[in-house]
Each structure stands twice: as structure tokens, then as C-alpha cells.
Amino acid sequence: MILYRTTSGLFVEHDSQSHRLDESSLDALIAHEDLHAYLSAVIAKGHPASPVNPADLLAPIEHQEVWAAGVTYYRSRSARIEESKDAGGGDFYDRVYTAERPELFFKAVAHKVAGPHSNVNIRKDATWSVPEPELALLINPRGHIIGYTAANDMSSRDIEGANPLYLPQAKVYDRSCALGPGLLIQKQPMPSSTRIQLEILRAGQAEFSATVTLADMKRDPATLAEYLFRDQSFPHGCFLLTGTGIVPPDSFTLQSHDEIRITVDAIGTLANRVA
Ligand code: DO4
Ligand code: MG
Image (cartoon, rainbow, N blue to C red):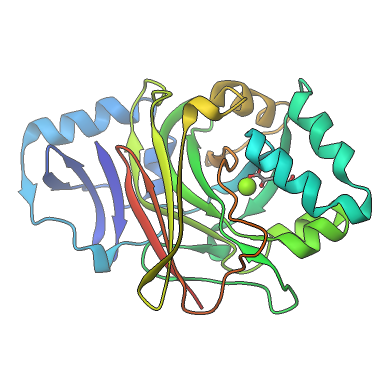
């Protein structure tokens, strides 16, 4: 079942059928004792609504913080070693890839997050910008993973590559994160065969595309969530992006008006344009 936040309220979709929720607060749903059971009961009551219009979709976030894990795929490790080699930063990426403690960093709050079909930004002071297509975990205030969505962890590679201490500037700025199109609510982990696909279109033509599966992720999502909740509370729950396994070639940088399409099996496609 997929939970959508729209301009006309919250909807749950199951078996191609939409149901409008009486509840209007996503925060309240995320904090629910058993969200999956609650939504199953709404579906079972069977008051179908019209299908959700993609143009009405909003980012599926209210008061949740967005965090991200890094260097969880070998491809991210190698690309970052390469981009930071002139700055002598490479060793850090190899060490964090193999360390027990994962890299976790703060990414966004709601006002920095782009929803489906809206614009993401590239920094004006960056020269090398890429999208990072990632699976995001939805974690409730008790630290349980209750759902998943597609995410874009927009990154300024030149700024991060100049010095790893610039990571927050390379990663955190207005509309540097996109989430959606909806929240897949399920108790069981995503299968390792789950594909994450990135397509970048320029003037309507394919500029870059690649696919990775969760089987290539070095970290277990539950362990990432457990680290994030160590000595830290999230009264409204949070999102945790699980890292990118796709990095375009070094010659590629995003341009204004590029379309970024991130598709995750069982979740759908998150489509955004670069402002
Ligand atoms: O180490 C910097 C960030 C890594 C990251 O965002 C990723 O691997 O997805
Ligand atoms: Mg990332």
C-alpha cells in the first residue's frame, strides 16, 4: 500500500484503488502505533476515491528530519576517492566504507525538500552537480522502519571534493533533497532484488541512465536506523536516505531544466526538474 500526501489530503492506494483518509496529519500517521494495520482497516472499509492525480502530489513529509547515510555502495566510495584525491581526502572514504560505524549526516527538513514534479536546485557556487538516487527509509518515533520512498540526495561534487569538511555545504541547501512520489508502507524489508533506476533527460533526450539493486548495498538498513537513533530522538519520526550506488561519469554535471527520474521497484517514479 502506498500513502500519498496531496493538495486535497492524504490517500492510501492499494490494488490500484485509492482511499481518502479522514486523518489529515502525516505526523500523526507516522507516529501511529501500527500504521500498516490502521491503513489496512481503511482499505477494508472500502470507500474508494478517484485516483490520485500526479499533479496534486506533495512531498510526503511534515515535521520529520531527513538524514542520509553515505558511502554504502562501492561505486560511491570509488567516485569520492577520485573526486577528492587532489585534496588528499580519499582515505576517509575507504575507511568509512569498511568501518563498523556508518557515515550519517543531516540532510534536510521539510522546507528544503522538493515534492514530485517540482524543481530541485543546483548551487549557484557549484560547478559540478549530480543527483543521487537513493532508497529512503521512513522510521517512526520508536525507531522502527515502517516504510520506504524514493529520494534524491542532490550533491555538489566539486565542493565536497575540495574538502570533506565542506560536506554540509555540498549537501544541504534549499531544494537539495527530493522525496516521493508516495510512501510504501510495509513491515517487511525491501528485497535485495529491488532496483533503483536513474534517468536524466536533457531537452527530452536521454543523457544518462543506470540501474543498481539493493544487493549492492554494503549496509543493512536496520543497522543504519539503529545507529541514527543512538542517543538521538525523533518525536515525529524521520527519513534516512541509504546512499547512492549510481554516480554519473566525471564529465557529467546537471544543467538547468534537466529532468531527473528516479524509479524504485514497488514505489514508483520520483520526477523533478532542475530549476
Ligand atoms: O561521503 C559523502 C556523502 C556520501 C553520499 O551521499 C552517498 O554515498 O550517497
Ligand atoms: Mg547520497
